[in-house]
Length: 295
Image (cartoon, rainbow, N blue to C red; front, side):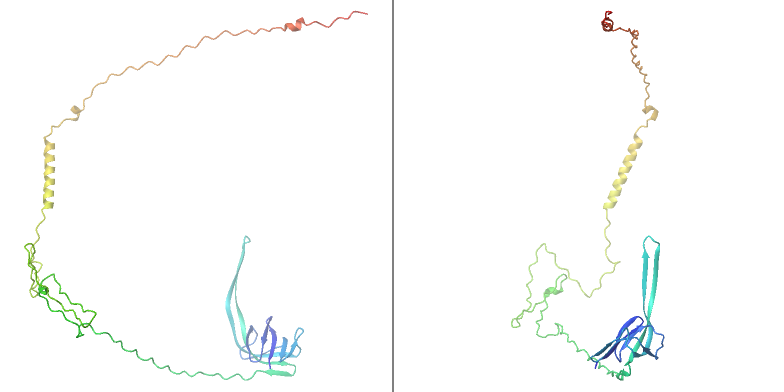
């Protein structure tokens, strides 16, 4: 049978059942105390559902306080542009954790069953991992007895030559053996190889033959000195000429300056004109009004 209730605390509603653990708003009760909540909005017992208006009469939820604490701090920042207003608010919401012990409706009380015992898991020591298997490395080529060995050649004692090792073929039935080549006839232009005794110690630095001095730089220096001496002798043999004799000053006659061009004389002023008033002859010759005869 399903039994649950909807209770209201801290301005919020929670759906709870006997034995549930819920986190609600901060309550004035310490851990280990019992809290009774009277604001029950709904109770469902099996198929019978009772809805309160606004709460169910004679209904209550009994819970036990388990823990108290505060949540994560939340920072809010408010700002209004062009109004010189900004404000920062931080808050850490406090909470209380409850375990629902029973739900009562009138005289009917529905309590939670005994909590199951805590089962402690037995720790079984883990078995150590098996040691890693040894890694077998292939034997080097010298150990294999079936590999053909090239015979020592007469030219191995010479400096600058290397023995030609025979390469085993892909077919084991036909191994390849080294063949010693016949020495060729030495030509007149070929330099015979020089044998070096490995037991003899190398000559020290002091016993080595000194290098021949380089005569190119000395010849260049002597040539430059000879050119400089020739230039110096040639400069001392030239006659010295004074600056006054070398520069001959000749008087230069002053050239006559041309006279500035003469300006034309201004023309004579014309005599002033006389203005003469001319009478209008047409006005004088115009006939006057006719004279009417007396009556």
